[in-house]
Structure formats: structure tokens, C-alpha cells
Length: 257
Image (cartoon, rainbow, N blue to C red; front, side, top):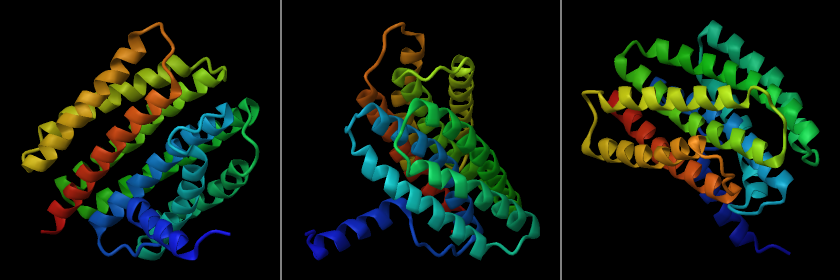
């Protein structure tokens, strides 16, 4: 039997990392949380592929369960926060898309199911992006757009990794090369925009430098003919995610000072 104290501690750690069961208090926070949903769609796919391959590095099975719960909690929090009718409508669409995705995530991972899941998560990614942009527009400031761009980097780190995971797993996707190229180009141009932002603090600048160094690995990987081990991709993508998540939170704080 699990120790109840350990269970509580682990749950509290989960809340601090994923922001589950949160109450959104301002528009900057809403942009950050909505942007995180984009990242979750790709992280779910990455974890699903890792579980399917039988790779336990980073405990992807546990992460899959945590992110599934976090996505739903975030979606409900965004719905409770917004009073904007257009945003409410988009969130309702996201909820409708989420129901079948959640069901697929509970099934035993196979490459055949992964192809269907990738399509569903792609649709959920697009609607999550629309929701984030609607919140950014409501902020009415350049900082709101910067929070959006920085938050999107989190998603792109997971997208690059999930695409590569599916390829290593053996899933055939004729559009793989173009999808990976597009994700990498968007990450690179977005990073340049963030680096040029005139309100960057020294801490943000350092985080962007670290993300840039780790991104060089993905650039090298895309040019190489060798196959990289999934655990290395998992590790590098999570390092970028961690740094960009911190940077996005700092951008959100700039807005409300």
C-alpha cells in the first residue's frame, strides 16, 4: 500500500510543476496557462510514443497521466476565467476535441493508434493556439504577444521531440521532414524575436541563451543521418521546456508590475 504522506507530497510537487487545479487571476496568467496547453498536446504525444516503445527514461507513463490531468484542469480554469464570448466558444471546441483524445490516451499504445492520436492532437493544438492568441489580443500590449511567443517555444520543444520519437518508433509519416523543418524554423525565428525584446531582464537573457544552446542539438540532429536514442531527445527537449517555461513566467510577471 502506498504511503499516504508520500502520495500527498508527490501530488503537491505535481501541482507546483504543472499548475494543476489553478485559479487564473489576470490576463497575463491566462496567456501563460493557455500557451501551456499547446505544449501539453505535444508532450502527450511524446510520452505516448515513449511508452509505446517501452522506454522508461524520465518515467513517461507517469508523466502521461500527470499531463492528461493537467490539461483538463487548465482547460476548466481558462473557461472559468474568461468572460469573452469568442474565447468561450473556442474553449468549448477544445473540450469537444479533448474527450476522444483522453479516451485514446488510456488505450495501449500502438503505432496505428498513434497515427490517429497525432491527428487529433494536431487539431487540439490548433484550437489551443487560437485560444492563446485570443487571450493575447485581450491584453492589448506588446508584452502579451511576447508571452504568447515565449510560451509557444515550450510547445515547439515538445513538438520537435514527439515527431522524432514517432519516427524512431517506426510510424510512417510522409510529412515528417516538413513538419520537423517548420517547427525548427519557427523556434529559431521566435527565439530571435525574444532575444530582441527590449524589456528582457538579465535572468531572461540567460534562459534564452541556454535554450539556444540546447536547440543547437536539434539542428545537428536534423542534419545527421544517424538515429539518436529517444532518451537523449527526451532529455534535451525537457531542458528547453524547463528554461522556456521559466522565461514565460517571468514575461508574465513583467506585464503585471
